[in-house]
Amino acid sequence: MCKHVLNAQVSIRAPCCKLWFDCAECHAETQDHRLKKTAEMAFLCKKCKKAFRKDMSNYEESDEYCPHCDNHYVIEAKTPQAVLGVEGDDPRINARMLKDERVKEDASRSLFATDLTDRIG
Image 1: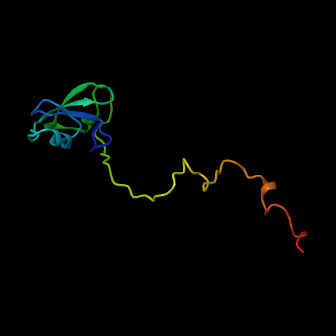
Image 2: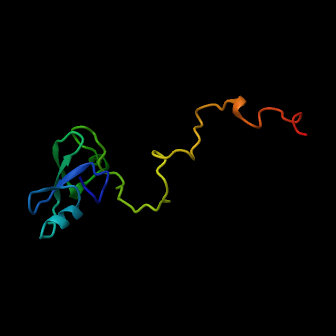
Image 3: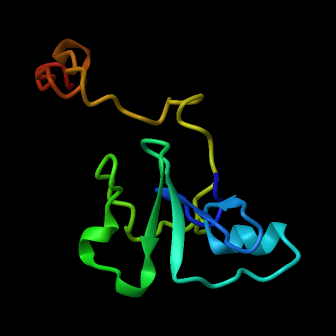
């Protein structure tokens, strides 16, 4: 599982050490050598779990799909980003401030539903 690319569709076999990595950054973190560049790359599809090779010197648009299961593996990468949120009570635990829109209000329980003008002095 890659922590750099959250939606990685394939693993790449590094030609220098013959190990599988989800991205080049994963290789750089775990290995003490640089990633060797090559014209032919070996991929492992994460959907069908089958390996295949692609010649990167004449790469075409049709090469963006796994030849076994047609999984589109060349997609825009989703990288983890910091999230800024408001701290407060967890609504799953303390839901007193939340109104459930699915339940209709009972009109007899509302102050504004009944006419109280005759009771005012």
